[in-house]
Amino acid sequence: MVRKVSKDAIDVKFKAPATFMRQFDEMTRRQGFMTRGEAIRNAMQRYIEAVRESQTTHTERVDR
Image 1 (cartoon, one colour):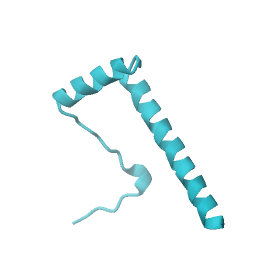
Image 2 (cartoon, rainbow, N blue to C red):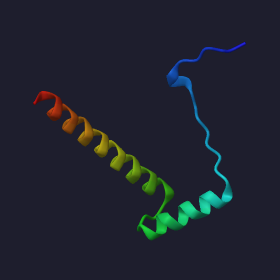
Image 3 (cartoon, rainbow, N blue to C red):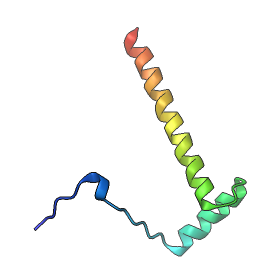
Image 4 (tube, rainbow, N blue to C red):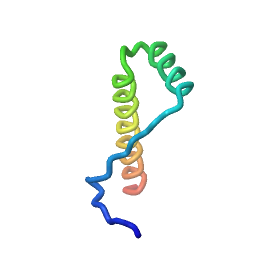
């Protein structure tokens, strides 16, 4: 039986392997971030900017 849950109620837990976390921390330090949170925030911000840019260029192409 499947329980229906609203999308807002879904809590995703991600448990990464230790080797992945070590590599992630190394890359975080190489890129000049102090914490994982800063690195994740920066990556999400770049993703959002890329999506906005692609939507803008798509809209411009469609309008022509």
